Each structure stands twice: as C-alpha cells, then as structure tokens.
Length: 466
Ligand code: HEM
Image (cartoon, rainbow, N blue to C red; front, side):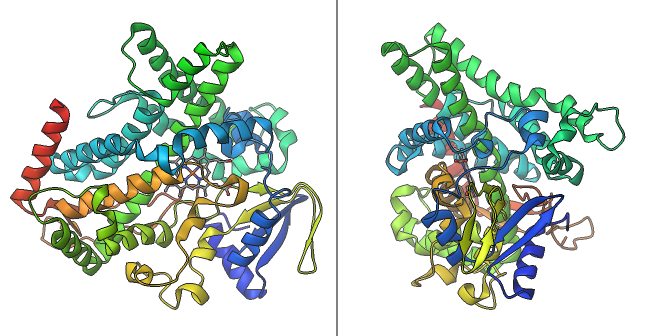
C-alpha cells in the first residue's frame, strides 16, 4: 500500500486495470475505491441505503476520543438528528444570514495581511475560526492568537496523525487497541494518549464560554444560544438535550475550522503560479465594482470569472482527495463485480475531479475559463456523496467566494523574493491526510494600491466601531 497521496496510486491502478472501481484487501479488510463519477452516482447516491455507513476507525474514535464527530458516526438516528440540526442552520437560506459575520472576518483577514503579510497562513486560519466560532457559539475571537482558534488547530493536528501507517494499524486490527502502550509496535498509542484531551477540549471549552455568556446575559446570537433557548422553553433541556447541542456545535467547530483554510491556501498558491488568472479576475472586479468600494455578495452574479475561479479552487487541489470513507452494509453487485458487505468504500474525489475525459488534457492546470459558458458539472463532488454529503457546503462556498473576491480586489499575490532579489519558487507539495493541506510556502502579498489599503482600513474601522 502506498502511504503517500494514495489517491494518485488508486487513480493509476484504475487506469492500469481499465476499471472504474478497484478492490484490495488489507489484513482481511476489504477496500473498494470508486474512481469515476458514474460509479459514484450509482453507488453512493442511487444505492445510498447501503453505502451511507462509516467504517469503525478506533484510532480516531477510541484512541483520540473523536467518537462524537459526524464523519465517524455510523448512519443512524443520532447522525440523522445532527444532520437535521445542520440543515436548520446551514441550508442555503439560513446560511445567508451569516454573510455579515463572514464579511467582518474577511475584512479582519485583509487588515492582518496588510500588517503582517508573511503570516498569511495563520491569518487564514484565524478568519475561518472567527466565522465558525461566531456562527456556532457567538464567540468573538481575539484579533490575534485566539485560544479557541489555537485549541481546534492543535486538536485537528492530532486528528490528522491518524493517516500515519502506525495509526492505521489500529483500524485494520482493532484488537490492538487493547494492547498496552509499552508493547513493541503500538507506540502510536502513546501519542494518542498524550493528545486524547484535545477531543474533549474542542467539545467543551467553547460551549462552556457560551453557557457562561448566557448566564451573564451577554450572549450574542448563535446556534448554541438559539438551540439552548428553544430547548429550555420546550422543557427539552435535559442532560441528553444539552449533550446534543454540544455535539452539534462541536461538529461545526471541528469540521469548519480547517477545510476552508486549506481551500484558501490553495487559492493563494494558484494565484502565485497563474498570474494571468489573477490579473483577469482583478480586471473583472475593477470593471464591475470600480475602486471606490469593496465588492460584496450583491456583486456575485456580475462576476462570472471570479465565480468560475472559486469553483476551480474547489476542483484543482481538492481539499479532501479521498473524501471520508463510507461503509457498505450488505453484499452488492455492480456491473458484474461482487462487492462484499462491510467493505470500506472510498470515493476518489481527486480522480473524478481530474478526469481527462471530462476536463481535457489540462485537467491538472488551474484554469477557471473551463467553467465560463460551459456545461462542465459544478465541482460539488468536492463535498462528497449521497446521504453523507457535507452539510457545511453552502457556508463554506460563501466564505471562500467572499475571501477570494476581497483578496483579489485589494491585494497582489506573487512569488516571494529572496535577499538577492531572486524569485522563490513556492513549495507545491501537500499533506497525505484526509484534509490535504499544502505544505507551508512563501509568497508576497501587497496591497494593489494605497487606495485599496485605505478602503480596507476604512471598512474595518467602520465595522469595528459599528
Ligand atoms: C472547502 C470546504 C469543505 C469541503 C471541501 C468539505 C468536504 C467534505 C466532504 C468530502 C465530506 C464527506 C462527505 C462524504 O462522506 O461523502 C464532508 C463531511 C462533513 N462536513 Fe464538510 N467540507 C467543507 C467545509 C465544511 C464546513 C465549513 C463544515 C461545517 C460548518 C463542514 C461540516 C461537515 C460535516 C459535519 C461532515 C460530516 C457529514 C456526515 O458524516 O454525515 N464541512 N465535508
């Protein structure tokens, strides 16, 4: 089994065997990889009744304590109730209500970048944290080094370590969970023991802050506060009711914190590598919005190239190349292939979004024009499949569009320059974990003009004082 960027090997194996799906067996565990859009639609969507469960992954659920997170929950009543909670607050219409909060967080991002361009990766993380902590808990984050943003960052760093082969051993042979951590070969268990507390910290700390704010009467509107008030007035605020609210907002916090960051880091990388795309998008914004104000959602329809660029961000280096594994709950047959019950089924989102028969020979290039006046499918598959499709996608798309548009309107992104004036080629590698973060890279981000910098200052001080 390759341990690095498995989605590339799975795509290659599919081509070598001329098959849309591939099967392999690891220590008696069946794995099926779905490499084509047609197969994904047929299995995950048309046959969703049997392809919507999750495999049991004790490295994350037991050893790190993330058993309460939705991507790891089996399909059942609890999961359906949580998804219903997500839909109430994050379907397209309610998601629009968070746009002012998103704008405030993106403006703070621009201000942070103006003052400290080198720290852009930390600023993006801060922006995504500000949005999700505001929506879920009504927490207004500190302008820098916010403790809740740091907690979720550490928690997710620990969670990402489950993609290491030493951790995956526990998922392939779950009985190893009971072997003492001093035993040779199970050293990863010690790492998990040391990091287990993060899964409780992310669940408890921000929720406690909302509860305290509600008790003081200082809570601002949020999913946690709205649900708590509603449940209290319906007499449903039992210990179970409270555990449900905590789990719902905890899922927003962990799932919303790093996915958007990864997409926006890829956007910055694309702008360095494809300067002509950046110029074209900036020209469109200038023509529609002018230089006296900053763009907003009301401009979205008038900016087709920028819209196409935001779609291409989701496709080009898609955030979760293998999505989240599904589990097949009963034996199945597809196109004459026998698919055994209990198989882990991986949708190779990477292969589907880079399929040359759909995207042409330049499938690996960043080219928004492919989406302009074309009937190419929207890259919605980046958000997964069927009954487990990402319930945060509308909010994520809004935040990505707004950040992309406001950054392009105000900043020029280019290669960083070293002390000899030579351009530095950006690092282009990315991680092999579920969320495929780009490796840290250097770049130069400068205001496009003094007027652009002033607009950012003006709008941020308006917002802060308002
Ligand atoms: C660029 C941003 C994002 C991408 C690319 C993304 C992608 C995905 C994917 C591929 C899945 C797995 C779907 C499947 O199993 O087939 C997923 C699940 C999920 N996402 Fe997202 N996501 C993003 C942002 C968000 C945000 C902002 C939130 C929360 C506010 C969120 C919440 C969730 C949750 C709770 C699940 C688990 C759903 C379940 O297991 O039923 N995601 N996401």
